[in-house]
Length: 228
Image (cartoon, rainbow, N blue to C red; front, side, top):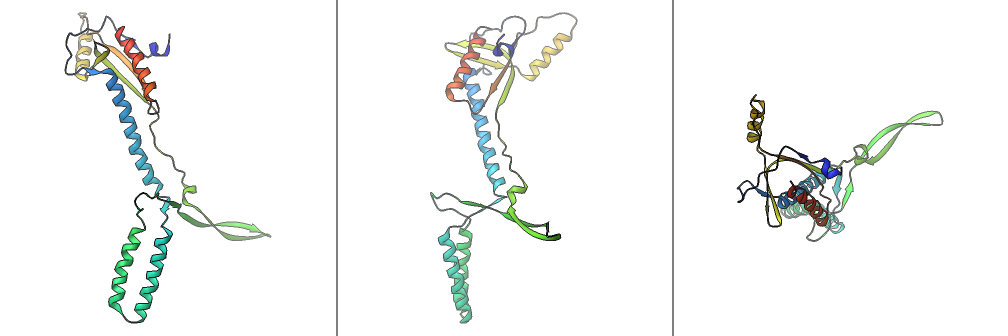
């Protein structure tokens, strides 16, 4: 028995076919593609979280030219203060504030360079029979390894209440919780009543699957659903 056959469990009878589509019917291929698209978007959101996490351990490296401008303005402020020109000093301070705030922003089209945040601590070192304290400076990241969250795969499991073929397309209707509860009550009755035919489906979906690979998976499952 193949892997795909193992993940399918067929209940009694055949799934009932409908002549017209119900508002709850979903195109099978669109459903699977939508699930993978949502996984990819979720990973993109997690990447943003990862960047914020990285920024706890890295500083944005300022552009050398901006640093030179700021140092030049510091020197200019010192000169006007020594000369007692408070008005000019205040103006230079406002310009300096704008330059300092600009340090954390990248220019249009320019890559942002990061440098690791450093931390220092003392460790005991034995040298020539004497214990001394030695200062160690290491990246803060070394004390807290980064583990990036990412969805590698997702298992889509559902019970299909109805399967319908419309030309080359396959439409499915997912079994609602309320309907499942009603079926459960029917089974508990002493009088045996033929329950509605349902099919359980289980599909492994990965954000790393190419368009062609995902289409192959969809085609295989559509063939199985048509034969049901």
